Amino acid sequence: MWSRDIDVDWRDIDNINTSSRIIYFINFIFMTIPPALLPLIEIYRKNGLRRYGLTGVTQLEHALQGARLAELDGCLPHLIVATLLHDIGHMVHDLGETPAATGVDDLHQRLGADFLSRWFGGGVTRPVRLHVAAKRYLCRAETGYAESLSDDSIRSLKLQGGPMSSEEAARFRSTAGFEDAVQLRRYDDRAKIAGLPTPEIEHFLGYMADCAVSG
Ligand SMILES: [Fe+2]
Ligand SMILES: [Fe+2]
Image 1 (cartoon, rainbow, N blue to C red):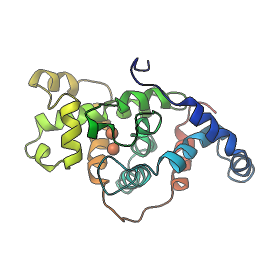
Image 2: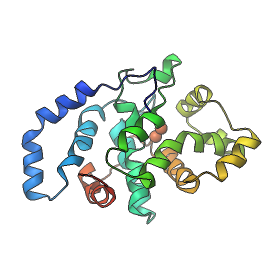
Image 3: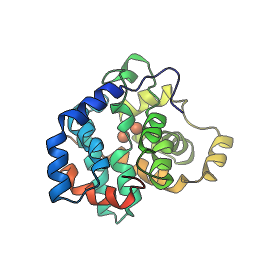
Image 4: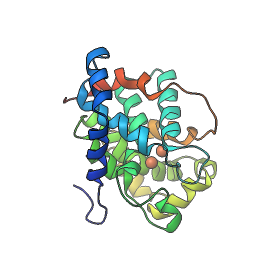
């Protein structure tokens, strides 16, 4: 379910689709990528240029750095894809680049997971939905984790409910997707290095195609 308070800018996304017919056609002919996945790539090409919170990287750079870490760690495709797309919720609303800086929680984990459910099953959407909870969990469960967070993550943590209580942490450990969510979170936290070279997003299309349940 979409949040009552946050509107997804579907018109913008539909415009991306309209303006990218040639790219779709070229991909369809030469790259054998399911055409239904290409709107996702276009969202990153356009809205991925937004700054990632108050860090020195863009949303796209953050996504690519995280996905590359997951890939180099030998993760299964669903976790590489979840890491690549985990913050897409920041790119499908109209609240601006850094809503957390003005005290607004954009609930991007829910927006993103619901949005991605058009293309992917729970293997991808669960860790996306839980990656904020994983931060709150690690703040409770792991000594030194909270201190290791970037200023940006600390600011958003307060809006997101702060560290879990002991009871919440115990419940979270038994939640489906817990381990993937925690693993994604570790890549997320490390994927904020300005200027770090990564592959282009097209490098990850094969993983996305492997994981897609439609299109
Ligand atoms: Fe996030
Ligand atoms: Fe992130």
